[in-house]
Amino acid sequence: MRTNYTLTLSERLVIDGDPRRVTTRRRQVGAEARAYGITRTERTEKFAPSNYAGIEGYWYNGSTELIRYPRSAGQRYEEVENPGQGLLTDPTEHRTIEGMVSAFDTKAGTRERLPNGSYLVRTGELSRADRIPGLGYFVDPRNATLSLVVNPRGFVERYRVSYSATIAGTDRQVEVSRELEVTRVGRTAVRPPAWAGAGQSGNGTD
Image 1 (cartoon, rainbow, N blue to C red):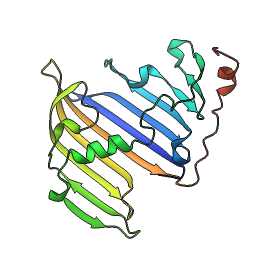
Image 2: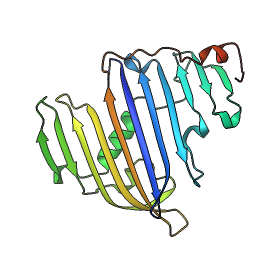
Image 3: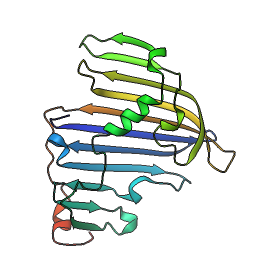
């Protein structure tokens, strides 16, 4: 997307019937994804794998990264000069969404036109299960469902995918759900976070 927007991504894991991890990432993306900021929260119980190595906050303006680590690591800040593309290789989630949609047979599902002109698509038919996002620790995905809202220009405004799987190398069962929503289109400002002052003076803690 050429304009700016806010992207909220939530993931939930239930292992052997017990909720084990809930992660929420709120990402503010600038026009053409030239700048973005991330606020990440995670509640984990007895489950080790964690995206972004525990990073709690992140901001990038096209040349400089500011990284915030959680209090368990001493609330450390880090500033890195990076004239490339920052921490994320897919800040807009475009490639992830494209791969996820290709994992399902959307033609076998239902399509409903919404009052605003967008379409709600639902399906439970897998065509390429290996393309479901987040399969790194899990195998044998099954009972998968996908619902997504697509605007008339083909842009995915929100989606929810869920599936059952087995944790690799074990017989433990996991239920995974992942939701994404795009809001504040054209109204999102990618400003330095409130904690940026500590990082801009070099590595530090508070």
